[in-house]
Length: 129
Image 1: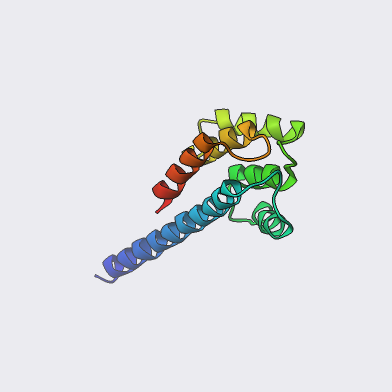
Image 2: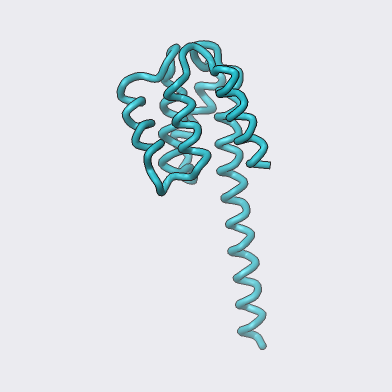
């Protein structure tokens, strides 16, 4: 009986950690989506600081760090080095769907997101609820 109780407690504790991780990932993606939604040529100093924190977050996925870095360095469009990394992320079947979608959106931005980009960003926000 004691083993069953321990097994159940372990299951619920580990399950709870998984929920927290998913929630944190959703927060990082939501943060980047909100920055992109209001982007005008480049992120603000405060947004750059937030993005820098994502790039150094040990819990962030490689895709999230790639997205945050590219967005952080963006000036009107993403730079060539970041564009190559975003292309790789967009094509990576192991990356999360929201990461691949954001990579595609960032690759297409010139100065600010288009109306179509904003619709796609809204869908990402809706799916992360």
